[in-house]
Length: 328
Image (tube, rainbow, N blue to C red; front, side):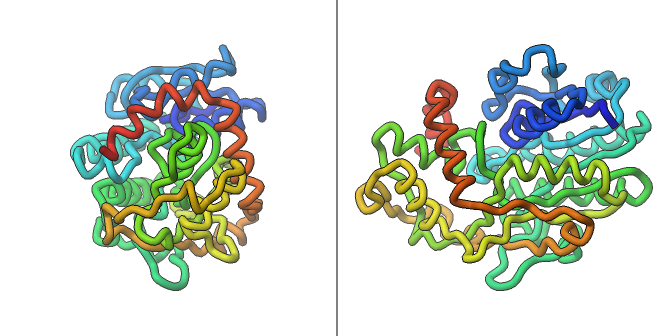
């Protein structure tokens, strides 16, 4: 399976995956609509090593043409920010649900050998104690708590349905971070705020728990599933930090890495979504038993992320104003 079509390959996790696979010698084609969260400049250093098709995964004809000569598909393309989904849920449904169905149907018609659908831990909702296993995902959107997660839950269901008769695998990763993440998301927002002399806006008491999974590790996991994932199965992947990392801890790490006083640079503000999911946690025994165990070194991975944003000021500075506009 040397010829891979990556949807959303100019977005955050997609870009990380594209670089990883190109360096492994794979032939990569990309479909990307190049919305605010996708950047052609993400791929500039790859030159003609990738084929970029600018278009929408909801476009049947474009998708059909893009699948010619392709062995496998990795489907990242999605609207992905909870705050934005509150104001434009229809867009999230169109891209995340309808776009996924178009990709799956066209891929099955084209005889694709493997289709990896990238889902999310948010399809399970929040959990106060313990960990969600793959079988805890219920059909429908009842566990999801936002327009974003509801759309991803529906897309997950569609992919699992196609997997009953086709070569489809669903991956449910936890909260990814790393290079090329648009600065609307917590870590790049906080890092870039410190770099321009502003404060980290920490919601509530900063005690929400997220499982921080380094995007390059997610790339390794996807390559593993392309070779080893069983058709019709879903797999969780997570870092499972011990101890778990609260948002307050993450913010303090960023201050330490950027050598600023956390007491002066972290600002606690009222949580605009006080009922939003407090803790995400996934059981990863299934993918461990299959043979994949993620490399977990959170502080070192945070440092690599901070260093990337320090070294790529031009990349995020031209995106910063738009990213902040959704919080006004």
